[in-house]
Image (cartoon, rainbow, N blue to C red):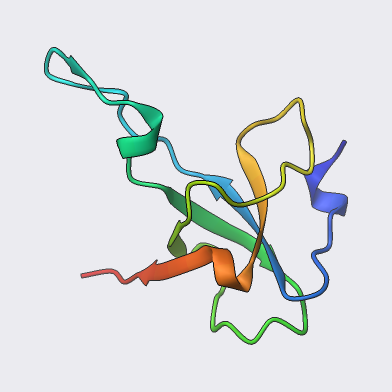
Length: 89
């Protein structure tokens, strides 16, 4: 599946999951304790969130649908799954 052909609808947002460290020093960090950060790829035209491609967001751990089961780096989130937008310093 080509992710460029996916156009979110019904207030959904397509994001690429950001890489987070799985190990800090000699300690392993479980998936549930990592920062759940993603980069916005596109959003539905009817989505009222003020997001642009490239914005970084934090999302709920148990949310999202993988549009391509073979590629775990992308998620379709609802506007309610997005908890915060990270602003640049």
